[in-house]
Image 1 (cartoon, rainbow, N blue to C red):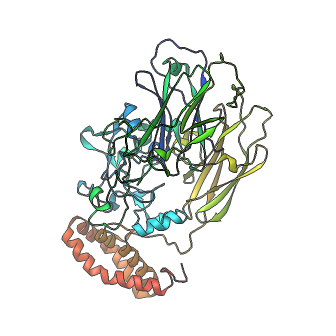
Image 2: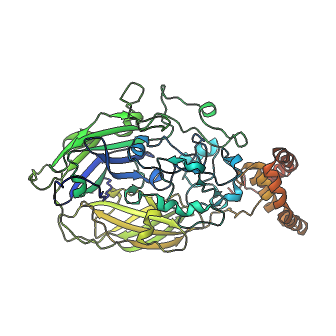
Length: 560
């Protein structure tokens, strides 16, 4: 059974401690694929006590506090548009706020998907916006970012006048680029969710999270365990949104992006006494969040929320475990007063030191896919239970260290795909970028939330066939708004497949790169000049498209 373990402790001002030692609890659930999830605890007065888990797109990659209009259209790894409705009940109930992130670029382009080249730097994770046909292709293909080496993003800056967000900014940026705002340098320091972020569950089977409650948390008495889950574009007849009227469509790049709005987040909750051994579960959802994320209100269940086919309340599927059927369940091991009745729920913890994995190696499968091989050491303790294996990745040449894990992306690993301890295991890592250097790390956790040391490896992926590293198409980018538009791509093809073939063409390229930057600055700021530039450039873009097809680089060509 795929599982996930997470150790967390909250040191809070509280009354007399109820227990002198920590207590282990498990949260059991099965989400649908590609869902964002948050798990947290509240006391009997409804006050937030501790976070247990938040999926990394929200907790690490800052999808809810990033530049752009809040209802920008979406796409695979969309780079812009804060998803303020992703997990609003959790976010508001935490009682924390962070500076709101907006585009660092000119204020006049705050609502644009493009026109940010002057403030854009290399990107670790997000992809250029996709057209709808590309989104459909990515959904059924390998989910590889198109032209990753050519795409840069505006990482943003803090909004003026102290405007805040209930979500943290991204913390996966280890270095600030010269084109970034100075604010980017403090994003990671502001993000306080390192200890509880985790990879998005695969949705292929049941999951569980292990949390160790400190005496300070236990001092709050009976607790309520909450889980909030959301998924983009989960529509029904009551929550039916339109691409053109309910989302912000950039009029200058209107073909890019797809709908993302749908049914709001759904929340489940169960009450339990962490000091008493036992299981508590529910199959009924407690309510749903604001569709626009405006508040932390928990709206009571009603007929507008779907409850089947993985939609709405059925984003958490029914799980049957040890005779209990539930969608959201909590098991506490208690403080030792209650004997183990042999109900299949496990045993009390034994402190142990976990050795790191051995034999970590990588093998290239494709430009965007590798296999990681390793062995979890054999365990002499018969009570050992493997609860979690985490694979981390980060781009760059700097070796991965434990203090960098908060910035590293996590790869979900299904435990039932691994060999037992003492035997060789393989994990496939996909959705990589071609010709990039990655640092990988592996750790594993036992059922008592005790973690192994980190094992690391550096690896450079294969170059992607026919991929070219783009230069700055200054004037074309200014005219069409972004280097990833079809017209700029066609002009680049005209440069690479026609102009570079002759000495005269090379001289023209040199002239263009020498004199276009100042023209590009003027064109980017003047819509009329932009229109004139497009009139002049369009015939060359059309020629580039023809040349591309003639060279076999277009759909159906020999170079595809």
